[in-house]
Length: 237
Image (cartoon, rainbow, N blue to C red; front, side, top):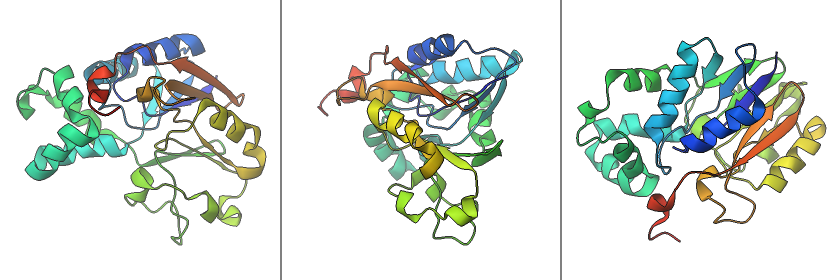
């Protein structure tokens, strides 16, 4: 049995399935997804369908909430934020993947999935979270929005509190080389960022990869982006 973590798929379902094939995921493994399943990439619906299919066919999975997964719930309720989400967050590509002209075009199963997502997971010597932990809190596992949004927090890590555990997160895109360096130093720094900017599609040097972290064997797997993300990047690059 192996334990894998993957983060920040961002609507890139072809790349996601290719990475699952690359790691040879089986029903005896455990898969932890760290959030941001939607937006920017062309097939957010397909990513959710893949996850739901795996869950329904005996794969051991737990899924965290990312800031983009939280954002679609907010956009559904807040018209002003909806306009920002569609344009600035990549929500337009998410709606297109559902052929959605109104919220009811996204069926209840998907809303149930978003509402089922966890904030963090503690498992076998690891703390899994989407963005990171706020070590300015007395208890960094108190659930706040920082778990989905925080950046630049490594300097605040309280190693007495952390003990022997390692933190695995995404949210802030790093290059493949940076992820590999974090893994090389994981015994000392006890943290690794596995968001290698899949949606960047190699537009940013070293990024444009979906990453899987084999937590059992401490090995990284990278899948180059195979999805057409040009719709999101039009007018941005």
